[in-house]
Figure 1 (cartoon, rainbow, N blue to C red):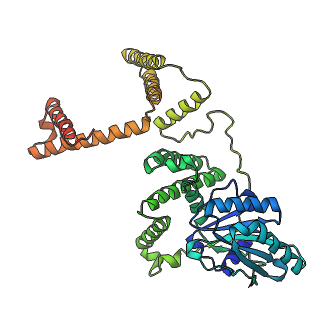
Figure 2 (tube, rainbow, N blue to C red; figure 1 turned 135 degrees about the horizontal axis):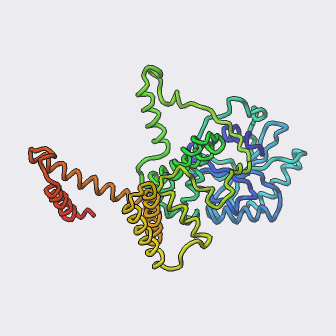
Amino acid sequence: MNTANIGPLLVKLNIDVAQGLFIVGADQIEETPFDLTGTLLVTDLINDETALTNLTDVLKKRFGTNSQVDLYGVALSENNALGKGLPVSDLSTLGASYMTKLEADMGESLTWVLLHRSAENTVRTSENASKIDLTGLEGAETEEGYEFTLQPLIDVVAALRAPDGCPWDRLQTHSTLRRYLLEEVYEVLEAIDNQDMANLREELGDVLLQIVFHARLAEEQGLFTVQDIIDDITAKMIRRHPHVFAKATSKELASTQLNWEALKAQEPGHDKKTLLGGISKGLPALLGAQKLQEKAAKVGFDWDTEPPVWAKFEEEIAEFKEAIAEKDYENAELEGGDVLFSLINLLRWYKIGGENALNRTNNKFRQRFAHVERCVKDSGKSWKDFSLEELDLFWESAKVSEQKHSLK
């Protein structure tokens, strides 16, 4: 059925979409993961024995043999739907008979949908056919649309994290996702710099996915949800702009609209014709170097053993020293870059991320220098009163303090 009609239909069926909703076509049910805790709406059912048997098998596996479903035949010509509740195990038998009989009684082909409701939506259709008035269904696609929601994306991420979801996504943590969030943000910046609005739209979506993913991880730990994030930032913006919002509440201001029509479209192509073209030039230099090397290594542009990697690093250091000795500082800058690039390659060989490694060193330097600063302050003297050797003693005492507190 037209996805623009789904919103009004759910309203008529008294489905609380806030509890979670996942919509999937019957022909995609076997390949599509979905959240088991929300309401499942299966569209585009057909009265075909093989199709109904496949659907029955999937639902039995996901929800259990004794689970209940609601089968609805929607007659758009009369603005109504007739529904019947039945065990999922009877879908391919009693369900098929019901579909055949109802279409014969109505004298027309019906649009069929199936609902498996979440625990929060336990009110079910009776086993006897019941009629639902869908007046207002036609023309439901208006300029105002329907209330905006992140629920579809939330449901996708929940499905990926589910026990039968994606193995890679199930392994992720806030820390492992850190790199990807950083990459996506810099790709947004590159799209802005290039004034590429189509790419900006896509990259903002990638950032939004990261936000929803982190929120899902937090929700699984009982910490906070996507709604908490939205409520907090909405309240903050209102609080910081009293001259604009006065006494308006966050709910009043967040009452935006959503057009429920979900069009299937191919992702627009990007001008990434070369192997390295897909790596953002806006990435931090260290992260960019690692991604360039990883991409090149995938097609075999890499050493097979470690010794040449070390040799290359030592070669670049020697060339850097030579440029310095010749006071050729323009070339020294280039050679210094080669040293850094070869060092990143060396770290990559040992599966060490250069960006993370340097961040840890930066944090370590901050901690140790803060200790030195406290020592200077506690002495009652100024920085100029200390020699480098004396300051270095403070630095060494910071290292001793770290060892005592198991800080490495």
